[in-house]
Each structure stands twice: as C-alpha cells, then as structure tokens.
Amino acid sequence: MNRTLLTDSHMHTINSPDGRNTPKEMVQRARILGLKHITITDHCEVDQYFTHGYVRSVPKAYADADRLRRTVADPEVLVGIEIGQATTSFALCDGLLAKNNYDFVLASVHHLPNTIDFYKLAADYHGAVFLLKRYYAELLRVVEWGNFDVLAHVTYPMRAIEKGRHFTIPRTLYQQELDRVLRAAIAAGKGIEVNTQGGYLMPDVGTLIRFRELGGQYVTIGSDAHSADALGVGLQEGLQRIKDAGFDKITYYRRRKPIQLPLE
Ligand SMILES: [Zn+2]
Ligand SMILES: [Zn+2]
Image 1: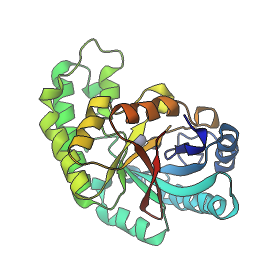
Image 2: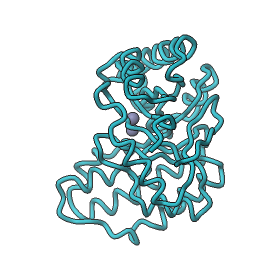
Image 3: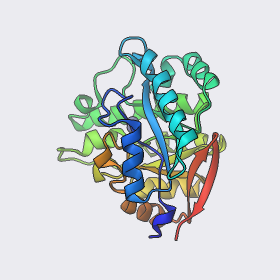
C-alpha cells in the first residue's frame, strides 16, 4: 500500500466527551504515521446538545480544528463534525452547518429515539432483528434530510449484535431496509465510510459491494480514533476491504466536496 495515499477521515479529540487527546496531539501522531490528510470529526450528539455540553464543545471543536487547518501543512488538516441523531432537530443541525465552514459532515445514528441502548436491545435474536429495522428506518430519515456528506458506520448496530452473541442475523431479514437507505444515499450523491475503530471493520464487504452495485461512488475511511494511539488503527485492512469490494478509489472531503484518490 502506498502510504502517501493514506487519509483518515474520522477521529475525535478532547472536544468530544469520550476523546482523550488534544487536536494538536492527534496531528502530531498523524505526522508520525505518515498520514497525508486527516479530518477531525468531533461529536455533536443532537439529542444531548443542551444537556451534555455540546452547546459549548461544538463551537470549541470547530475553532480548534480550524486553527490547525490554517496553520499546519503536513498533514493537511480538514475540519469535520460527526452529527449523531440529527432527526432530533434538523433545524439545529442546519443552523450549525450554516454558521461554520466545515470540510466534511458525517451523519450517525448511535441511539434510537426513546429506546434503550443498542447493546441491550440486541440481547436476543428477535430484539436484534427489530433493532435493525428500526435503525434503518431512522437512518433513512437522516438521508432524506440530506445536509451531510457521508453516513458513518452504516451497519453500526451489528457491532453490538455481534460482540459476545452466539447468533448471526441473516442479511435477508434487513436487506430491504438497508437497500432503501443505500439507494436514497446514492441518489442524493452521498457516501458511506469504512470505519476501522479498534480493528473492527464496518461495514462488511457485502454491504460495500451492494453500495457499489447500486451505483455508490464515494467511500471514505476512518479509524474513529478517540486517542492518539488509536489513530490509523485498521486503515490498511480497511483499504484492502474497499478494494475487495471492487472500488478503485477512496474519497475524502474538502469544503464539502468529494476528492478521490486512486487505490494502488
Ligand atoms: Zn459514531
Ligand atoms: Zn466517531
């Protein structure tokens, strides 16, 4: 793998509640790893915006990352945001995005509205199937809103389902719902990411192939690191998975426009 191609489009800093290192420390680590383009994507959990400090951390995350964008040449620093639960208030999201000059917007669903945590809900087979259908319905609402660039970890509940469980969910049980999301995202010119957090890769190669077959073009890659030592973990395997799915390019975003790099 040609290391000069390496980009990491998903990471968190101390400006996320669960991040451990400063933006500057993330940049220093990226330089050591030889990354050429990094996008800082601190959390904005819209359902917790006024209750968990995002009202302060989101503007600070933007200001800190923007300062690095203007002052650091190597790696190129891009300013992103990971918006969770946008369905809570699309108006709030649109306002934030209009105010700041982001390079990249990731959209996530980490929780369903008024529902217990994915991990608990996925405890049994029927709970897991119910969860996946609800999850994709919620994700479809996010796609229909549309003010984002890429869907983060599109098969997110699978991690909760697969970890420590002794069952797998046949794809046929949720393929229709997933396809609906992928088709809508593709029609709107959106991408999906390969998320390599902790070496657990999402989505599976089958989902990536489906995305390509339906006409999807934009696939980003991100380690979703919450600390400097987790930066870049799994990227090589993620790039391989993207190639295995038949893509010959990866994408990152600058000023909300996709930039594609050939995969070698
Ligand atoms: Zn996430
Ligand atoms: Zn994240």
